[in-house]
Length: 223
Length: 68
Image 1 (cartoon, rainbow over the protein chains, first blue to last red):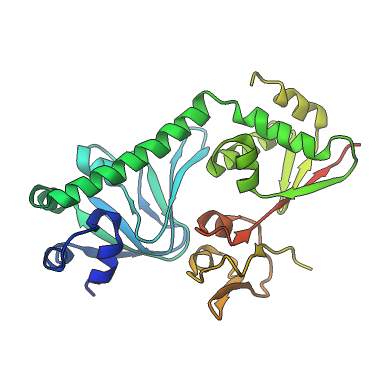
Image 2: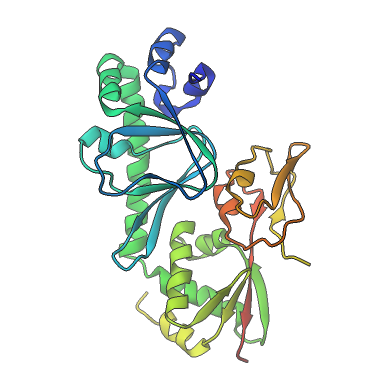
């Protein structure tokens, strides 16, 4: 099956590109499908393709030596991943895993280089995509290095139960992120860290505060 | 009753991305709106909420204290 031109047109890389050029690009596109939880790109491996999500979603993440995951982004239809390494020739900076069944379109590194050499509009589009990515990553770096997000998430949780016994309001990770001034991905990791430190337990749709004192101590970490 | 994600039908654009990531098969798009269907157990992975572009699906956590 060949890639639909309508789909290519909607990819930010190919925005504003005429039908004749899109047709020649479509010939370089290959299809790849992956099942739920399948690793599509492995961190550290030699990168050879850039991928565009046609359907489904892909999680881009890094794993620490201790096995902790930091999610960088969730890639949705029409968005791309593994762009950085195909342009700098280095290894994949992060892994990518299918969150469900996904259909991907890929372009090989050499083909992408050839496209960029002959299509200045695409080179400009790619620059914009990468600039947006840098902005997002800078924000994540700021969160992870300068802000004590764990203590702020601890404070948010504490405030929900402070002064009363038992249940507090219900909060989504997105709402906690907005309250802590951070990204949803950082909240997920903070909750896991609080659980590892014994202050809370994640019990399906409940966050159980098991050690209020420990939670208070974590709140007091310089903020 | 199984605790289920909260769906805002007005915000849902029926893209079905949440359906593809739900490993419990607890979601389906019915008449262009995502719907929770009876599934053995939603394990509250919150992936549906994470992928939703329009914020139409929410998986709130109930915050409970064991201590007074």
